[in-house]
Length: 81
Image (cartoon, rainbow, N blue to C red; front, side, top):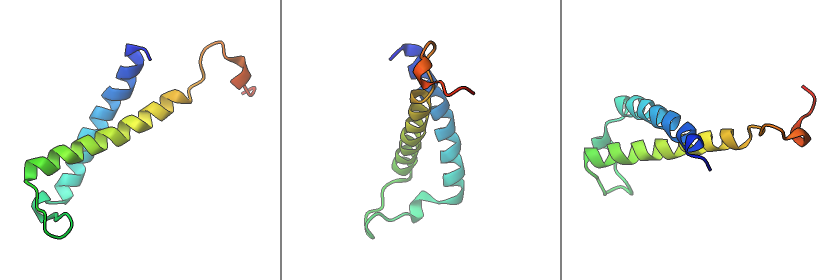
């Protein structure tokens, strides 16, 4: 994988993860989240975990989008459009 492809995956997913985290944590207070009913992590831990979760999901989406892009000179995937 080329470095440019890696940046096509990571940079847009970073931006979208930042926006998704902002929206989610504007609606949900991390102090109200209880994991398994009794575990209450600190606010910063949930912010970081949420951001990295969103970053992973968005990076996976970008990776799959880049994976299905036809390569130049690959005529066997051409369906005539």
